Structures are given as C-alpha cells and as structure tokens.
Length: 236
Image (tube, rainbow, N blue to C red; front, side):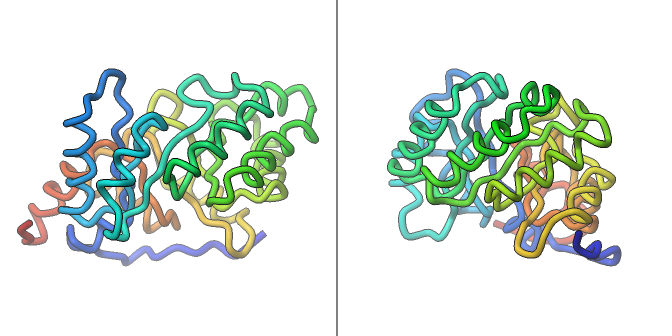
C-alpha cells in the first residue's frame, strides 16, 4: 500500500485543468460529424483524451493523428461484466489495432462476489496482454463490500491494470474524493487513479485531483472549463 498522495492546496486555471480531462462522448446514435467535432474539441481545449465508442476509434484516431491527444475507448460497457473473457481479449486487441491508446474495461463483479478470484484476475489480464495499451479497470466500488473492494484492487493490480477507476458512470457513483483517496491509498507505485461519474463542475474536478486522481472522465469537460473560467480568466 502506498502513501496517500494528495495536493490539498492545488489550484488550476482552465488551461491547466484541461490535460487531466478525458473528453467523453459515448451516446447512442452519435453521428460521424459529431465524432469529428468531438475530436476537434479535444484538440481545441487541450484535453488529455477523446473517449469514444470502439466503432468510432478509427475515425477519431485519424482526426487526432499527430496532436498528442490520447484515443480512449471502453470495453464490456455499459453493461458491465457480460462478455466472455476470450471475446473481451479479442475485442481489446482489435480496438488497439484500430488506434486506441487507452482502454477502460468493465470487470466481472459477479465472479468477484462468487469468490472466483483467479477468473476475475485473468479476465483483466487477458485484456492487458491482448491490447498492449494502458488498461483502466472500472471497479464499481458502491457495488462492493469493504472486503471486496480491497480484493478487487489487489487482483486488478496483479492483472496488470495501469489505472484504478472508482466506477463506470454516474449511474453507479458520483465521483467523490473519498473513493479516489481509497484507491490512491491502495495503489502500488506506478498504478494511477482515474475518477469517473457525473463530474460536472470545476470545484468537483479540482477536489478529485486534490484527492489524488490524475484523470477525470467526463462528458462535461467544456462546461467544467467554462465554470473554472468564472474564477480564472482564459480564452480559447
């Protein structure tokens, strides 16, 4: 278990906060033009990544080529933990081949609760091996007991997860400093924490970063920067 790494006095201008935000667009029915606009927003505002469905990864990867913006996608989501491990690994390899540079994945909560720890770990490890890119595990902390939370974190790190993530969406949990600190306190050296779930304001995002998160997954990135601009003058 690592020491808690927090920065309680952290203050960021909008331009300084943008590189922590993974600009997310996963709505059903998003069009080609909307996805291109989303990718261009990521460049315009200097976001860390454009998070998009796997089917749009090639388009977004082409749009972001040479910009330094990450191309992130999600797997076994939004219905978390429904894919077979073999299917999940194969899809992970395909998503990486298409141009994704990061991958957020659902985990097998039911297997964890059933004591199927080897299967839970290998499900994640298969994705890590097949994709060859940083994998973030969406742990759905509110669905777990305290003991299960600790086990899930350890198994995820054993499997090679690069990031621990509190939840897949705001339907599971509104991202909060307590969950972030829980993960930061247990993360091994080199394992990072991403916060996700109804992140909608500058203050909320700042508090999550102060708690130790290094990434914020949100579809409200532009609104957050505008909210920050109320206190920190910036133009784009």
